[in-house]
Length: 520
Image 1 (cartoon, rainbow, N blue to C red):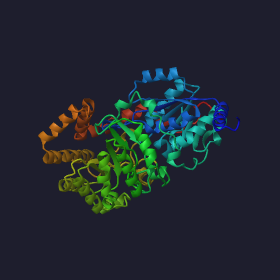
Image 2: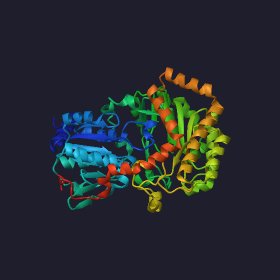
Image 3: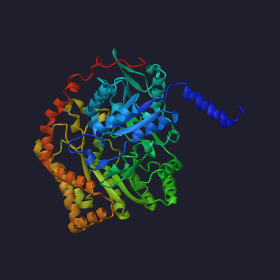
Image 4: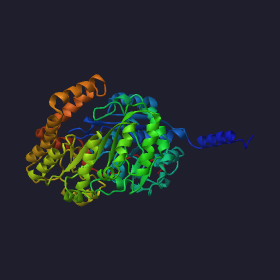
């Protein structure tokens, strides 16, 4: 009987669960921040927290996810007090969240003084020592689902967290780095995201006014080295993929009509892109898929678009960045303007949805803005978007220009404001920037027609492909992006925002106000 496989599995599980105390873990997602509001057009589920919870639950730990963007603080606090967490994890993905996350950590330590306060996420991993401050006990550096289970297990055993790799500990004597995180595992070995923990929120998430939407990751990392991006640094130039079978399995567990593949570069592997597209098409489930990829991939493999249109509707986000080769070289894009132009033609001919994006530089003169407008006129790409180049901590660009950055107001780091001095007077710079958005809309009305555009909006509302709430958000964002005063006001109100977080700025590395770690 002892040798029976089912008995051995039961005995092993019982042994594992009895060797340490099972923990209750609350995982918190804070608002993104940013002045114009990145969340006006993109408001998606906290997939990273779902992945962490998905790795903890198989070990017997109980998790909850609190989305503070949706919950009122007092209601969220009430839920957490009923849950009684032993560990509270707070994610910081975007630099705009920094002060909000640091303040949330303080509030959580005040409300739950016995709980371990853990920070993680992309921005924390880029610059963990910035987050070592009052209220924070430990920062995780790397992929959460590969670090946090060991952290939680060790903490539950009253073990020494200094033996858990991938952490920065906040101790009375200063921060302690525990060494590099474990070698990254194949993605198929990761448990599925714990999507059931956001069941109460799922209808609130949207992208480009389409709701509801679910996030699905099929690959992680990026081999390219754009100087404004930290993705490749975070993943140390690695690129990992899930098998088509695993992706189909995850897709089968969600029922959203809209799916956003979170891969930084979709279709990187041509053979796998074909296999995955055929596997999804074979399920017969049609969805609206949103992807991000590069123009040179589309130029080399245009047949992928036709194949993937068999899976349903497809919308492609293209980070073109610049309209000429000189500009592309300046951001180390490793691509050409010819590829960009040809890719637009291919996508337009296919009938797929697409959204090119360009990087605006504070050093631009009027002729540079005009160059982008003429490109839109020539291509008819009225769905173009425009981001102001922003040096995010952890990028090559930050290392190069951080001495020229004029503000610690992280709310301005929303890729819609400049944190550099501008060549044009600031008011003229924002006038030109807003002019790009207005020009793209003018081209849309010229090509599509105002009446047709309005009828399409009404049809989308009538069929509930777009909600009234999302449409209103879009209208507010459109108004904001065309109003230079809105951007100027953001700079004028910056001192007031910084005053609100003055304690976090004045003592950015205060190591002496944090309770001792349980294990140190």
